[in-house]
Image 1 (tube, rainbow, N blue to C red):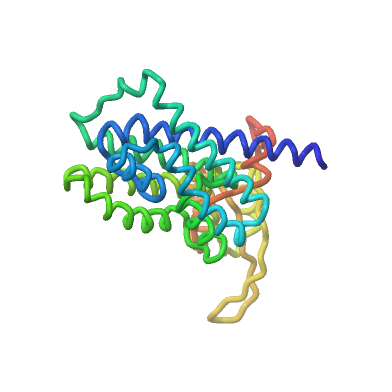
Image 2: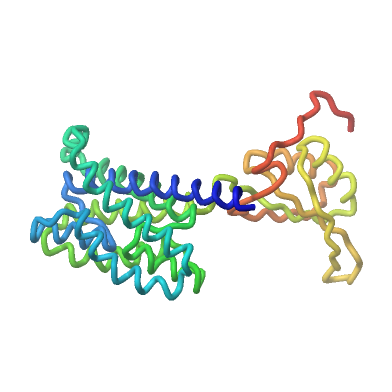
Length: 296
């Protein structure tokens, strides 16, 4: 048990470190050279850099201390430890990337649209990885994590609202043109963050009501190698007992499922819903080998 726990902790620390390095790279290589602002504590750190020429790595670390103390009450020891690790990693990489030659070669000032999109992509990807593996990068990420845990508000939406506040202050040193592209980067960041958090195994769930439920379920098993569950249902009009099939498939298999349902029962009622993350046989585990030939 301890071995499994240590392996899981090492995996979390590794990906939090990776996510922080990507986020810091986005700030140092894209946002700062192209005079794009940022939200949250990172945005405040950029404000201090432009106003007082303070190293963002140092200011980020100092500004996070009071927020980490606040976060202790809500996040617990493990999440707090991962947050402290993320904060230290972000501060380190913010200073580290500034000394790498490639940083000075990414000159995108001639196309701020590309700079804004890339800043949002890299930052969102980095932050998304950090959140997916249970950490934060400190700053307003702590507040967003608390809102996610306590109120169920998506992290991306919380970050977008908090960023808007900091970005308003950033107008003290940015012109409208750069602010517009900064808002573009913040929007892309929020979308990418939520997408990464939703999981790599996004799927579609189907509720199928048909008198030929047994035949449809058999074909789902034979042709798609997907599991299914029979649910007891009651007709709302005639109060008759019915069986409903629930199954989860990958997005690319939706058309196949529709075809086999139509073939078995053209009058079947089908409801398709988004499944933001699917865990288990056929999604995160190795699927059974498909038969080249099958009989109906």
